Length: 225
Image (cartoon, rainbow, N blue to C red; front, side, top):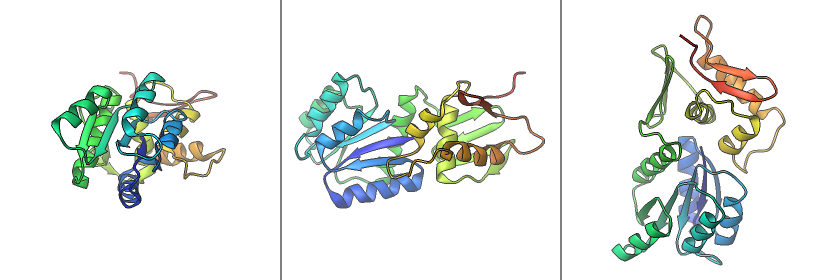
């Protein structure tokens, strides 16, 4: 899942980026509202995290312009503005969640995961495709009851494909949702990542779940019964 973080505190921004990437998110980050607005219009983010008090363009105005431009990604405000009126105003502006500083990192990550599920109209944190089980909260994967060890990026890729079960996902869609601007673009990066993932979740002797649709992309689906 790909996240946009717009937060002007360098320390907090770097801390959150580190925590999110360790958890498996692709993250683009900036400390300025105008750059945040440009980024929000340039990529199909799964979640956007905004501070309210930002230089050049405040978070409330940024969110209004996002919604006016048709960007529907779930938005979480992170802010020190903690009155009831502030929270109500933030939610009425179009935010999906509102977290007051200071906050526990565990709560932030839990809320972030919940917003990712909401963006895909999924309530259950566990995704199931055939005999493949993906616990998106604990970051655990099992195939036919056997644990599968994945890297953070492989887990990110698998989760994205699982949220689109049965649908062909193009290479460009995978790139937009699984990688961030820190990743050097490589012509075969997506194909290589899918190949590594397939070796782990489709071991010999089990039905194939991850399929290639030549010229179109990839699809994760259970075999027809």
